[in-house]
Amino acid sequence: MLQSVEHISAEELFGAASRLVVENGNIELSGIASLGSMYQLATGVVALFFIFISVRYFDLFRYLIISSVSKNADRSDIHIYSAEIKNIEILTSLIGAALIALFVMRISVMEGLQHIFSPLASLSVWGIGGVFLASILAIMCGERAMLYIIGAMSGRNDACNTIWHIKLLHFCIIVIILAPMLILTLLTEGVVAKIALYTSVAVCLISLILFIKETFLLFRAQRFSIFHWILYLCALEIFPLSLLLAPILRG
Image (cartoon, rainbow, N blue to C red):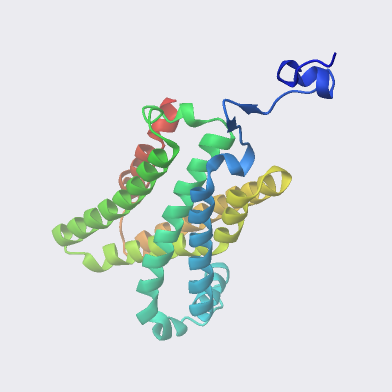
């Protein structure tokens, strides 16, 4: 007599090495799929928005990149783009903050690092991403407010505005260069994602060195002492970054 179908195990039906992949009606997802369709949709929206502004401001993007690596760029062009640079600074800052938040979400799930974001480990993946996005925007607004206060108290609004302009321009250039690689990291796995990630880290380190050099030259041109430059780096660059990385370092 044939054995009842309900009593046939997966091993008997398909072999000893087989196993069921459905448990309690739920399929366990892995890789990018484990982040959910909303994550992929959000990454796609950010990517499309970046492509749109890249096409819209292509000439300005090209000028910013060339001027950052070559001092022979025609500086008179800055007057042509001065009306659009503020819009670019705002748009690219929002894109950069969104990409960082999505990247934190990706590594917290796919790399199994959600537990290191203490005390944020109790939050959902989207909660962690939202906290990082809000933190980045809050830090940028706080730095702008501090520079405004310092400029008003010292009577050097021109120097403080120049510092803020240099800071935002460098961040814009980093976002413009790294956005394609970060999007590739967010939507791929394996060797491709690792190469894109390592390339992004290398570009960030180079950009950091260039930014530090630019601020040093600015402080020297404004006849500030080296102590004021170091104080600026510690108060407005290192300290906010340490606040953002505190949950990771604590974990």
